Image 1 (cartoon, rainbow, N blue to C red):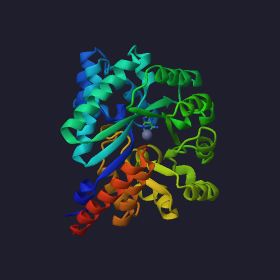
Image 2: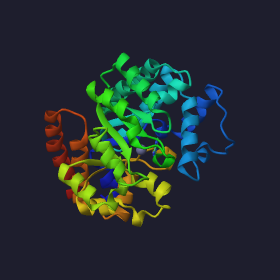
Image 3: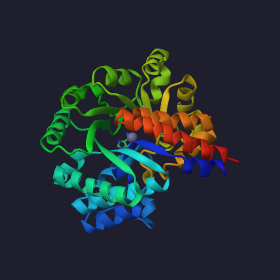
Image 4: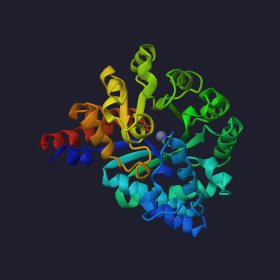
Length: 341
Ligand code: ADE
Ligand code: ZN
């Protein structure tokens, strides 16, 4: 078995994936046609997924969201991304979605989450994959809207929705402290907490997310390498970073995989869990991000074992389930590693 086949076969936890960034281009085109959403001209649907910067990417992402309206649309996109994940042996995923994006387009929160839950149930039946949902605050919108999002979650509880996150462009001049109120409400209601932090801004945003918002893990976090103090603190506290090599090499590091800060984070001993962010929108998948980490960031077999265990540590599941996953997956991992050429 070669390295790529090995990386495809190992069991995976997926903690950093955006629902709307996971919509296949063909599906986006069909859903936009269904709902009369106008898309730019294209020859092949995949041509739509080509953008010069994160803002143009987010524009495409929002445009795609306009085509996802009916409960069965949500079911379809959720099922499709989980089918792909299962094909790469993702066993458990915590998937972000942006409720306010859909609500602004007139979609009821219940329609959106219940469609996603239909997709989760169908994928579990067909592939045995488990998935939970993380409602993400769009940081480019107002703090008041974030509070409204949490109020909507509280008024429409679903077992599958277990936490909140914070995404969209961090370098758009919106600091994480603006969202203290929404995070406080979610925390008091028992939701788990994460945020995209220091993807594009200094490590202070990581401290704010940990100390003010109460986040349990950090999505991205690459600028942590600018502060030895923050790195040491995160290492000492065992903070899990969910890192996505492909999407961020493209957006922030000029496609220079060899100088991506993930390598320094790994060398320092931070707890990294790798994932693929927005797979079709960045032409990647759950294996390709691992392959790039191997080819360019010094990840070897033992690092991938650690990544797998870090994903289990960072997942919002019960400790007995984690213990069982660690035991069984480690055995599977060893068996696969023994077959690595
Ligand atoms: N989707 C929403 N926000 C994102 C971000 N900051 N990076 C990648 N995908 C995203
Ligand atoms: Zn992300």
